[in-house]
Length: 177
Image 1 (tube, helix red, strand yellow):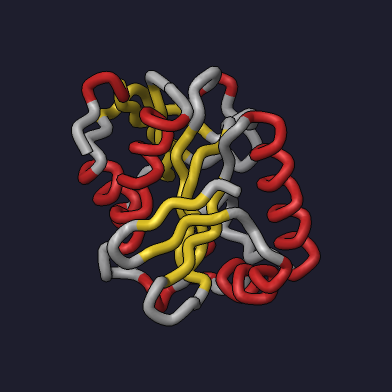
Image 2: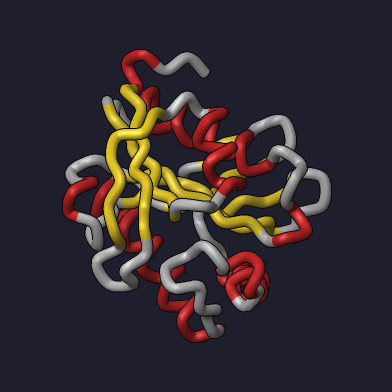
């Protein structure tokens, strides 16, 4: 089982007990504002998401980690790597992604987890390039992307939701954690 510990977080594979807290995060309109078309996700949709994320681990050797606070054991959300198959112009590179519940915003957790994910991508998986895809206007994600040292590569439009997207990238051979 793949786990990463940071000073404040445990990045780990998904447990059955993560479903309800992740569904609560996905049901918050503030959290989902910048995701796809901004729609919230149900408990059943969240269960399907987690199942798909776990399958990606098995198929690709990477995926989205559950992010747990070491101090309390609370599920804060997710971070990790995923293949952005919905956006062919970003392929074949994996995308770093994150989603944290609103109570966990503004405390540096997203940046801490994302840095650990880039180290995992380089050191454990031997990846040489990772992208990040964000909606234009999502300043919170743009701040994390900037802290990771990622640079703009192109703008595009989400093929299904017709919203503007920014693709950033980083050459991991030059990444200094």
